[in-house]
Image 1 (tube, rainbow, N blue to C red):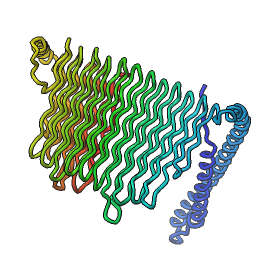
Image 2: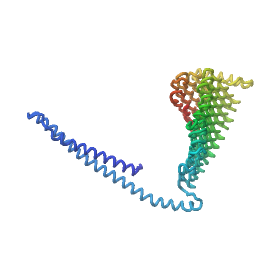
Image 3: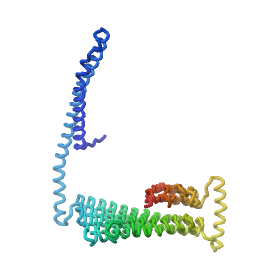
Image 4: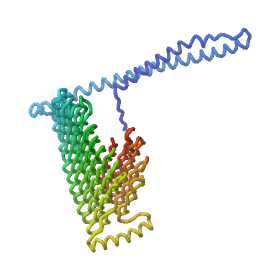
Length: 596
């Protein structure tokens, strides 16, 4: 049995439009009737008279056909209008008894608890900072919080209202944005509402309010709401900008991004941390930390990216911790671009029993005369099985490139994370140290220090021999990470080992180049991060960020997309797309934010 869904308002609008079209066609036909049906002959000879009669006959036939089409058009419009009226009448007839029944069910609960059984919470009015209404006890979404009160005298913008909580089933309401301030600090964004006790995601945190002048800083973003038993945590709100308008020009900093909400108690990914606000004449705000995952099978949220800062870029937020049983740590956020100092990349989140550590965030680029930010360290793997997270690449610097992050260690079974690539610049940064492979089985990450343990050395030599045979036969190692692309070349990272291995990170772009794509993971592993696009210090065009590599065939997250390159006379280009997460338990981390 098939079902039909009709919207009476849409049908009525379509009927009105068709009627207008019919009127226009009728007017055009009427205007053309006289000139074409009474066509004069060019001369008095028989041929001219016959030609004129022939064309006039065709015109009369066209007019007759047009009259039939007009009649059909009118009947069609009448049928469409009647259908819309019938649907509207049926909706009104059905809604009246159902609404009365729902009101009767909700009335006792509303009187006793101030909250209905079924229904959405009311949205708070903008500019009030009031909290959103809580949803019905059984079913419904929480209402959105109202934005904070605006400030015109320099005392600071008001805090946004909290999003309303859901009941048993439903999503939490979004937090209200912080109010703006004309001379003080922007208001803090409201926290997202809690998701349904049984199922439903937490509400997103509100945006931090902007500082519109003076020396005020942007407001911090609101925290994302947590989930109940099953559901994802809400994303943290982005920090507000410190804007450069005022008597002496603003020097305020960007606000920090809000924390991501925690996932459901049993299942649910952590919410992503909010991005830090921009500081056009100050420092960029720090990205918020990703939320922790639920108890059983989920990944931590990714950290928010740091904001751009005229003085220093904000640091990236840390990735969230994975579920206790199985799940991957969240990726660290990218550091923000800064003039004097790029922001540090965020640390990747840790796994617990089974899972991969999160990738460290890339360091922020530094513009004229600046030192780039260091890449974030990779997260530690799960105790029983999993690869350590790769360290983030150092940022591109006008004077000195950033140092790559340290790769996370594996514990029992798994590879250590690759060390992060060195940042480029007139003086290049240093490649980060790779993480150690698992104590029972696992290869060391790229650029890992030489072990002092004879047992570990013997293990690595045996794996190298096995991988050499697999590479010769299949073009890919068996148990090892893919090598990263060389910094400044835009080369792609190599794929990871067939059994378990992370993809190598893409190399950052050279002059005018895009960043390289991250390598794909093997059966178990995380895709390599895309390389950052080239940033131009002299008016050229920046490069696009590279695409993140695909996650493991069985278990693993896709790699984060590379940051888009900057250009001092043009807008930043696009960040790379995050890699696909192949397995059902894996989570794709989102597109990396563009450079400011």
